[in-house]
Length: 56
Image (cartoon, rainbow, N blue to C red; front, top):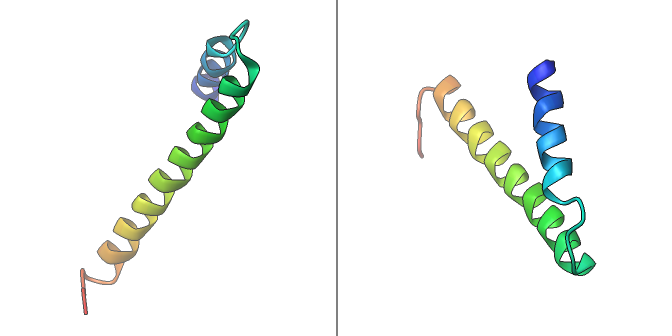
């Protein structure tokens, strides 16, 4: 759990005192989008691994 808190602190510190504000909002939205894509890729890989890599 300490690692997740450390990453959260790094994430918060990276955007502190950044200007302009709309760029910060766009970067935060982009980071959530990238996390979602990474999660979907990992899910798809695990699904394929569990089902025996049947690609048809």
